[in-house]
Image 1 (cartoon, rainbow, N blue to C red):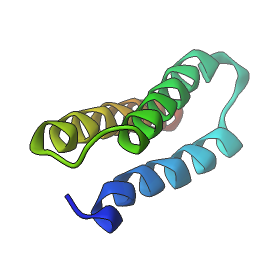
Image 2: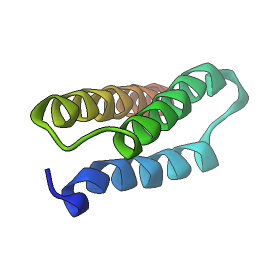
Image 3: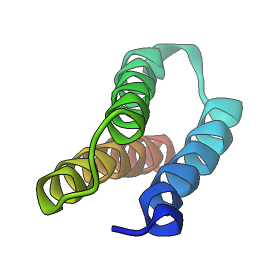
Amino acid sequence: MSTPDKYESLTINLIRLEAEIKRKKRNRRISLFFAITILIITTVFIIYSSDDELTRQISLVLASVVNLILTFERFLSLKQ
């Protein structure tokens, strides 16, 4: 996994998370807390890990979990 690819999904998720935090209401903070926590874990994992296929797969799974949380939050905010 090359260095630009490594941080691309993380950067996209950070931008989405920042936009989501700006529009959030108080009753949705727990999900955002989990998203922020997963992003921090992903960042630390990417920085301190080696460049192998397992690392790439784990970081993609963590990025997907963050995407799911943010998509679910957006869906809930549209229903209100």
